[in-house]
Every structure is written in C-alpha cells, then in structure tokens.
Image (cartoon, rainbow, N blue to C red; front, side):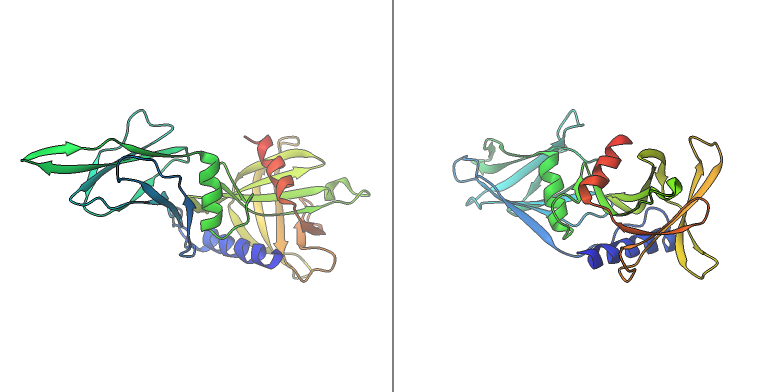
Length: 272
C-alpha cells in the first residue's frame, strides 16, 4: 500500500509542477457499480448506477430496464440545485450525467410512448445517492481504499516526524486534492499539534547541502511569527525506519513516517 501511495503522490506532484492549472486528472478507466433496489413502476426499473473516473466533473452512468415501444426521459438535481436539470429524451436504456459540485444527487427516469398520436408519460422512477455514498463509489472507481475520499476530497498522502528533543521537528505535512480537480493539491502543515499553514500547493524542487532532492512548500507567512517559511517533504520507501523525510523551516532533514489516514482527516477537519 505504501508504494502505491508514494507512486500516486509522485504522479500528483508531477501534475502540479509540469501541467498547467486545470489539467484534468488522468485516472484509470475503472468503473464501479452499486446494486440498486429497483423502484417499481410497471416494467421500468433502475438496474444499476456506475461511478466513472472523474475529470473536471463527477460522472455517473445510470442504466434501467427496457420497456417495449418506449423512449425514456431523464433528469437529475444536486442538493444545491433548486430545480432539476433540463429533461432529456433517449432511445437507449442508459444515460451518463455529469455535474460540477460535490453533493447528494437525485436521478429520475420515466417512459414516454406515443399512443394514437399523443404522448403518454409514465411516472418518474427515482434513485437518490447521498454524498457519503458518492464518496465511497468514487474511491472504488479511483481504485483507492475506502476512507481515502471524504467530502469530495482525496487524501493524497502525508508524513509525520517527531523529535522530543527538538520542537521544530514535531512536524506533520498532509496532502489532499479535490476529486474533480486533482491537479490542484492542498497542503496542511501542523507543528507541535497546531496548524501553522495551509493552502494550495505551489511546489518547487530544491536540494539540501547533502544533495537530497525534496519538494519545497512556499507556505507564505507563518501565522505565529509573521515570517515567510519554507518547508518540504520527500516520499521515499527506502528510508530506513520511515517513509521519507520532512524538511523543517530551518532546513533540517528529519526521517518521517507515513501518516495514518484517520490522523490526516483529523488534521484536515481543523481547517474546514
């Protein structure tokens, strides 16, 4: 698992340093389906929902049973929308929807038949997905463990270092990204149990005097000192006794361990 997280982080850092802002995340082509308890409406039943790898939007594919002689109309709405989307008509028994903001989502489909020159509409069949369910489906679609996606964010990875003899080395760095915009990575820096800085990651490759290459974080002014601070990190599974290094504001290299996923979310929750 550690190697996969390191590879994921390196890919994200390369996306930030080499790609222009707004470049969509090139994830794998996996899909994940959730079994749907069919809503009864004559012969029409929603049979499956699949979460697709997100790009700049959240993408889901809905499939329903075929009804002889019918076309289908569908629409959807998110929790932050007052109204449903524009109704679309299709001959297929499936549809892909895409929406921008992370949210609960409600999807509806109905039959439409032409009888004696008049259109006859069936009742709407509804399927609701809570935001929590959306998180779980997206995590599976992205081939991530359950718990790595919360509230529309991906936990990319994190390191923590602790030295009882040096308070500057009690340092945690956690990295997150929005599921729909993973080229933009957010960082959170915690020192001595206190959040000292967070924001969008603007990376810069640097070297220490011993030749160690690391990713520098230009964190701006420290909230307590008012001075501009630069921290850094290195993910390296070859480091004895750890998962990499963190670089303190005074340029010290400290062996760090991989952060526990729940600990990372505990840190992130403070910044909400």
